[in-house]
Image (cartoon, rainbow, N blue to C red; front, side):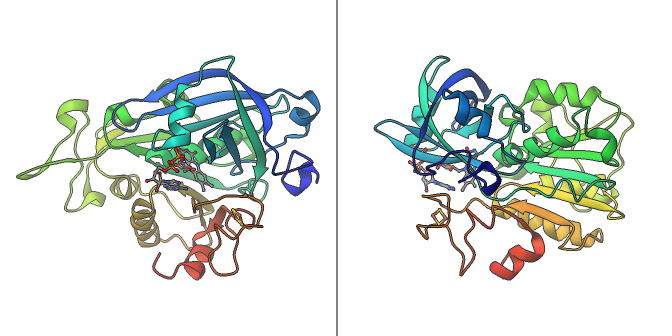
Length: 316
Ligand SMILES: Cc1cc2nc3c(=O)[nH]c(=O)nc-3n(C[C@H](O)[C@H](O)[C@H](O)COP(=O)(O)OP(=O)(O)OC[C@H]3O[C@@H](n4cnc5c(N)ncnc54)[C@H](O)[C@@H]3O)c2cc1C
Ligand code: FES
């Protein structure tokens, strides 16, 4: 199989040995997130591993198992790959224990990708909720790379997490906020106490939006961080649907409400792309673990338009 078919390896079931180059703790708390930078050891396989924005890899730890992760570094030719793992179970706990120099297995790249070439000349709005910002990162990194930025119109990034401590890629976001060729909007969730919502802004200093009518919120000049949920932040930012594509990823409940707001703003389901995270095993359309009807999410996805998702999942 060739890299053009989506696999950088001649046997897509065989994990290739890779070495951890760097580990970055992105967020602490009960479900910490780490970004691992890894490089496949074999020079030839490394060169053949050409991923596209939106594709995923399968990482394995000896004696523990395999798990699926969005590749969140922009495509490159040096075989260096990054992915961010939230510690939720066996494999992710082991991955969190790895240090530079340690080995792991990598298979991939798998799945389809975001059609970034077709989007040239368009404005792009990226919306990430929680760890869902990870798959979105490879796409915005591609679009805003110096060699590609001129091919796209306005770029807006909207991202939210539960608390300031849960926001990932903090250093990168600081640098993105300083760029004048894109708009960055961030939020942290309302926290709920026994009496109802408490403004988490008291912790982060981020003004709360008008909960009852987010679209009417006055945006103070120079403020781009708010206390609200991501769908409400989208309502505050009000991206225009004119010649615009939206890339969105997050927990299903967040995506559902983001989609409702986007259609309220005039976006069609064809303009909105998302990436599904169904349970997977083989990653190549053989085992039947990930399918929804006759669609294999690992092969025909994980990237779909909202129109395609609604056909597969009418409740979406
Ligand atoms: C295409 C795709 C891309 C993904 N990208 C990322 C990513 O970039 N970063 C990241 O942290 N995670 C990502 N995931 C989810 C990740 O694969 C799971 O969290 C991981 O497999 C859990 O492995 P584990 O052995 O640590 O957990 P397990 O010990 O297997 O399970 C622990 C807990 O995690 C839950 N879980 C297991 N698999 C999934 C899953 N696929 N989705 C939701 N919950 C699950 C289990 O129900 C259980 O509650 C992605 C999944 C897919 C399919
Ligand atoms: S994961 Fe095996 S068919 Fe999709």
